[in-house]
Amino acid sequence: MGKRLLLKDIARLAGVSEMTASRALRGAPDVSEATRRKVEEIARRVGYVPNRIAGALASNKVNLVGVVVPSLSSSVFPEVLSGISATLKTTPLKPVIGVTGYDLLEEEEVIREMLSWRPTGLVVAGLEHSEAGRRMLAAADCPVVEIMDVDGDPVAHCVGISHLEAGRAMARLMLERGYRRIGFIGTKMPQDFRAEKRLRGFLEALSEEGVALYDKELYAGGSSIENGRLLTAKVLERTPDIECLYFSSDTMSVGAYMHCLANGLAVPGDLAIAGFNNLDLLRGLPMALATTDAHRFEIGEHAARIVLEAGTTADRRRKIRLDPQITTGQSL
Image (cartoon, rainbow, N blue to C red; front, side, top):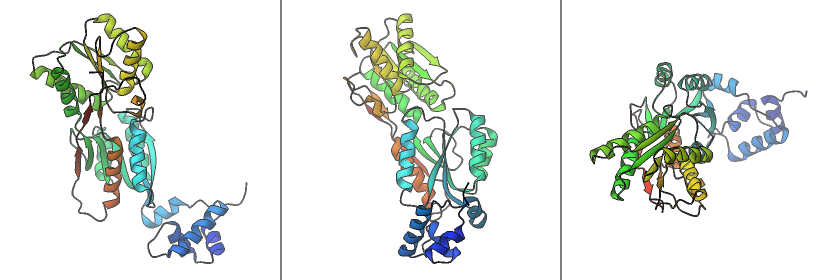
């Protein structure tokens, strides 16, 4: 094991004081560009890793933005992270990720650990938390941004779409297209609060027109193409005259489409299908499937900007609501 490099070693190699080297590596504005580049280049060349804990003790903050998400198993949250990363790219701040598995107690532990590192900001998916988790977010000494959802009572800043409205809009579209025997297939139920809200809005819009949900399948496991195929087959076996299926995710709707292709069913002639999220997974399919764009990348961008602007704007709560956008495709 080699000797650990210290900040004073970098300062000596760069010919500057230890304080100047420290400020250069933190991106302090009062360090010249030439000095900053020189110190950074030497640090890279010798493999120096800053002691962020020591820096946090001195400055009360580290250059990290905690991002707490329920899953990384599809491109939903990675795209949000891409928006955050793209916005922070030209700053000293870097995102660090915690995954909760849709478990509020696990989320509580992740939030506690994230905040213990004194991050510059914290971004958390969803508005629903344990009581302890909500108290920690409310007491955090950094900007907290809840993302993905605006249907509820945010602790502080909030960026997202109305999932209730997303569900209502899809129901209205299906009714306009003449469908009445309509079903719903959802995963991660009831842990996925946003999918629950979409279903609630969907049911409300159907009820307003005197239409009841024809069938539903609520699955506790995760979304996958395989589960989409299996659950679609299950519903069709139970309710063969169903006309249209709404899925909690595009991954599931792709599985339904694959089931139809494998069994000679015409889409939308024999079965109309629609999903949610407008995932890249839909690109390149023989047919464009109906979906709803939840503006994941933009949500990440807005959340990161709120963190960056926290010290320059008034301490008022910011609530940014983006409008879910339906793409009808060819499957409705």
